[in-house]
Length: 118
Image (cartoon, rainbow, N blue to C red; front, side, top):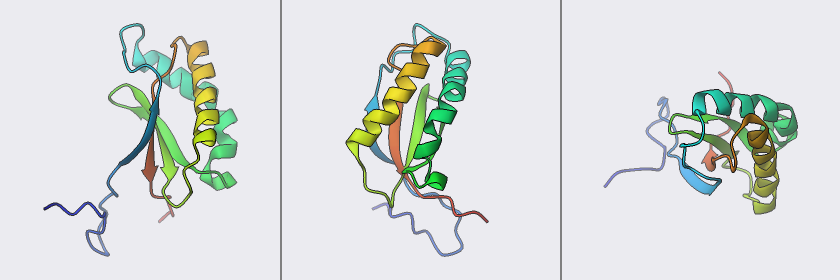
């Protein structure tokens, strides 16, 4: 049996296992080039999402383009998951995704550890 607890030892750099929370959007990539559209959507969303970042007291650890063609959003695993907050965050992504050229931008929320620095 595989241990997925993320506790591989005190001196380990092993990451916690990814825990999926929820996905939004259309995951078909037939209508756009992810390497053109997604970075633009990320740039358009950055200022609106700052209030949701953990450094500002929000639930998000970070976000970015995942190689499979969607935006991965890391939700602080020590913060209660709130669907209405996820809906508001997705509305920012969806609005800016449309501005960048993609309808129903694909987004996945996952639980992540908060970065504590070195």
